[in-house]
Amino acid sequence: MVLPGAAPLKNALQRAYALFGGVLQSEMPLPELPAIESDRADWAVRVSDRPEGDGNGLLGEDSVDSQIKVRSVRLPDGVRLEFDDTGIFDITHEGATITWCPSGSARPDLARADLLGAVFSVALHLQGVLCLHGSGVTIGGRAIGFLARKGSGKSTLAMALSAAGAKLVTDDMLAVHPGPPPTVWPAAPTLHLLEDSADQLHGPEGRVKNPLRGKYKVANLPADRVEVRRTPLAAVYELLPRSSSAGERGVTRTRLADTAAVMTLLRHPKISESLARDVATLDRAAQIVRQVPVYQLAFAHEFSRLPQLVDQMMGWHSGENSLPDAT
Image 1 (cartoon, rainbow, N blue to C red):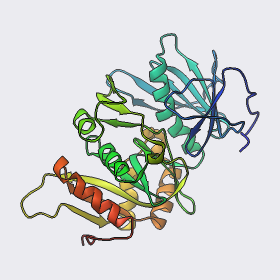
Image 2 (image 1 turned 90 degrees about the vertical axis):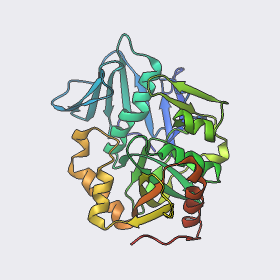
Image 3 (image 1 turned 30 degrees about the horizontal axis):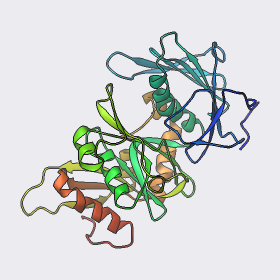
C-alpha cells in the first residue's frame, strides 16, 4: 500500500514492524511489536517537535485514568489527540500517518501505550474499521471475538484458548473491518493478566508487572500461538461470568437478534465517546451483525471450570457442537 500524500523517506531512525496484518514504519522504537524487514508502509509514525497544523474544533475529552485526560480535536485532514502526559498525536492522511510531538516529561512506555491503544483506534476508525474493547483468537483460521467489561475474563479466556491450540489475535483492541466479509486485524502479540490468571496459565517466566495497570504483561508467546494474518470473523461473544451453582450447566450461549447485537457491539467501543457516537460507527456495527452471529456467553467464573469453557469454545468452532444454544 502507498500512503496517501507524501510517504516518508526511509531514515536511520525508522524501523518496520508487523501490526494489524500490515506494515508500520516508525521513528518511535516499538519493542512490543515484531520487527520485520520491509519497504512497505501501511502506516507511518513520525516524531516531530511541532504539530501538523492548527486544530479547528474540540470533538471531546476522555479520561485515561483518574489524573490524565485526552482531548480529541478536529484537523483539516484528520484528528489530533492531546494527552496531558505524553503530548500530541496528529492522525492524518486518512489514518495512515501519525505524528507524535512529545511533551517534555513524556515517558516512552506510556507514549507507546497511547500509540498502540487510543491513537491507533482513531487511525483505524478513519480507515473504516470498527475498534472494540475486546480480546480475540483464531480457531481453524477463523476469528472469534470476546467483549466484556473489565475483570470479566477476556484475557484469561484468550490465553487459555491459545494454550489449547488457538492463536492469539488481540488482548485489548478487537479491530474489525466490516467487509464483506468482516475480518479481524491482529494487534500487538501481548496479553495482560491479573496475578491469579498469570499464575494459573503462564507461570513466572517472561512476564513483567505493569504498576499502572496492576497486571502482568505476557509477551513471549510462541510464534505458532500468535495470529499475524487478517482473518474472517466467525462470531462475537459478550461474556457474562456468573457464580456456579449445583446442577447448573456451566456454559451456555444465546444468539442475539440483530438490533440487540448491534447495541452489544456499541456497548464496547475502543475509541473516544465523541467518535463512537458517529453514524459511521453505527453503520459498521450493523454491517458486521448482518454477516456474523453475536452471542451472549454465560459461564461459571472459576478457574476450576475454565477447562470446560475452553473445550466448549473449541468444540463450537472446530465443528463439534457438544452443547446446544440456549433459547
